[in-house]
Length: 111
Length: 115
Picture: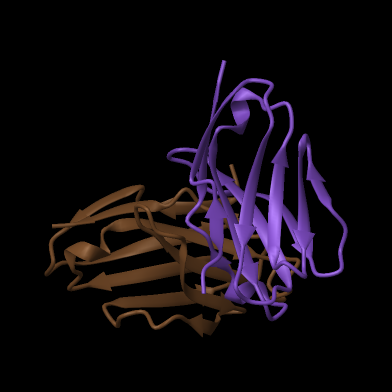
């Protein structure tokens, strides 16, 4: 079953912060985050594993709450380059062969 | 440049045509994937190959036929498609052990339109 992402879309001004959430109805082993710009390939941001630590990619960080079966992506002091669609992928069995992705969150950062 | 190249970038085909999508990875990975990305829908996993053997097949209609002749190349053969098959088809690769900590490297996709 696919994870649910919220919000579906968010518009920011450069320098503002945002949080994107990813929730699942199943117990999770890992959560993956990717960003896709229009017309381009999705690009890996980070993976969070059950029992692992919070991860970071530049000024973007993420947490994984195993008990709540959810992950949050924190974008701090957003830059224009952060614009794109953010996808979370989840799996429950310890294999990336069974990743299920959410519908994505469209982030727009304006000057 | 992700190291995964897909051709063609765009494809228009009729329902009776036969065409193939090609994916090549230059990363030395052992696993390759086909995903379907439709508007307002999540990425859908179609097939996974590890060391040229199919390890996942997510109930994909038989009008889609994958082929993995070696660990660097992956094809998706298409025949008698339906208009609802119009979508962006993404290829990806990963190191190949199937671990939960493996990241995917995606190509830019083939935008397919079925008329």
